[in-house]
Image (cartoon, rainbow, N blue to C red; front, top):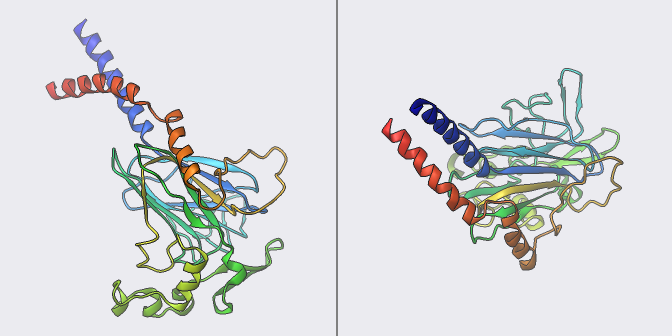
Length: 311
């Protein structure tokens, strides 16, 4: 009988640890608000497992939820003008990742607007940003939801269509039939390759690598996004959230496709005001473990730890 009890108790502990691990992971909700198809890609950082998919098709008006693990770090972006055969081999006009539908560890070819994040483990904070250091291809808005604790999580992104005002020397021109014209705006580093623009060589530190004419154009259009390598002060955000909404083309007005899932757009396209932030904070209890439940789970969790130490 003691063996049966011990086996059941160990099983309970495994289930409890699994539940707690999942409850503290984050969800990335990716929405395509563009009037055309995009192909999002994901890349995990060193030591982080890949997300459930590393590349997929997302039609206009559709959304997908990807669950991460605590401590995950990586990048999420959108590819445009893609063609793939039945085996997933092909190419994209912007954001291409090795000529495959599933990126499988390949990063985005510039120019590409990037969402970057490192999730904290346990009570550690998340660090996130939207970067145009590798150039720009699509507007995007990132909105944290379900804030842990009493902190406030800020939205970030680049909701301006920089392609419309991209200098000619930085332009990437497409011709895919539905998105003719400028489909991407290169960074000065990509366009010219000099150490000064790339923050490399003698310019590989924040004192010598200063904002350039071109990075200033990006910064003026999108003040909360990275415009060059050492643009940390105004571009990195800290938070602890249950979910991150990533919306491509957030300001686009388009007719929704029949039968397309309704995307959970942020309550305010643009930068949320204080009222919206308060609503986000107050709604977090609807999706997170309330304090009494967490306290209730702490007792059996302690017993599990004691049991494991005895063995």
